Image 1 (cartoon, helix red, strand yellow):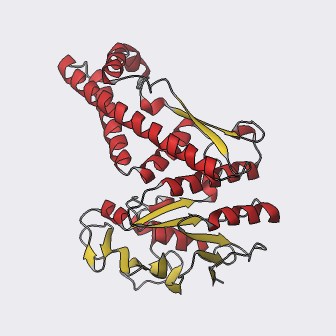
Image 2 (cartoon, rainbow, N blue to C red):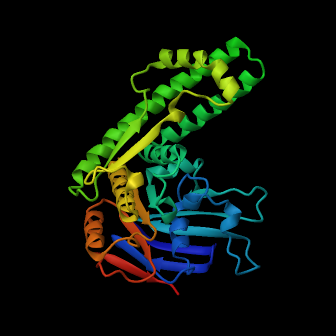
Length: 349
């Protein structure tokens, strides 16, 4: 777990330091006091380009001073010091991750030491928005469990864009067939990974032992039974259609996600705000339980976790979180009525 955290010129924190050697870390304070910024700082210690808010490195720079040259985040994780940040004076604006004073050649190497999962209020409606947002949400679960999934998705999208360009330029058949072959190979890998993750998530959901915190989730696709050759044939068959519509009409990028409340049997779109939030929490808990860390530490960031719940439901959620093998950071505007076991409270003003 994170034993100590230090921020310098990050968002509205000019200098911030706190000891946090406990299972739960509760950050309490009024609106705009910097609670979420602390969670965001921790999320910057991941390979994600902009942490949980997707922010550019220069956008999180503190605006309270005009004498600084950059920002930094430093944590003590067990016996390891991990840090990130950037320097305005550097020739290239970039963000690196340091482990015990040595720069990691690739940010992805940090996953051997630290895995960070987050849930924010901005994600509350992610499963009732577009199929694109639902698919991105599930793909994030996939690459939190299998990090190589992110690279495969990026490659697939690159080849998909390349195929459309070749189609629009009155394509060369050999070139186009080569692109479609790569797309079909990647499609099978992506489909297989999603299927494996779905089974892992279902298995972890079944272990929660709570009807309230146990959504049912399915992938809506007709691809799982197809091999590389079938996908390649389908792509070739759809060339004219795709050219006319200016989009690729077939592939793993068209998959949707269906989530229902196991108690009421309603689709998540018809559920209440608290029911949607509880199902997201269940999926997040199942996700972090499904991660095989091989010794790395797991951190769960929950921004405004209990804002939609009554006292009884809050107690139920905290009980379930207490048995997760992770350090859990929670923000709230006031001290919750539900007691957090083995906790540290950080008060902001």
